[in-house]
Length: 56
Ligand SMILES: [Zn+2]
Image 1: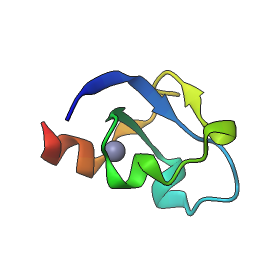
Image 2: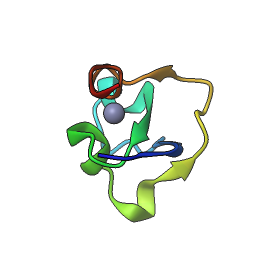
Image 3: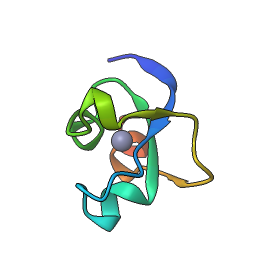
């Protein structure tokens, strides 16, 4: 498990629950669903993902 720079997606391909958060773990199950071409760096002004919080 590793921390990475924050990333998020704004793609309409994902449900709002996934669009409204950012991730900072490379093994977050929700973060992993974001395809590389839909991945944007930074927090995007979003809240931190619950899974990432749980991972630490
Ligand atoms: Zn996450």
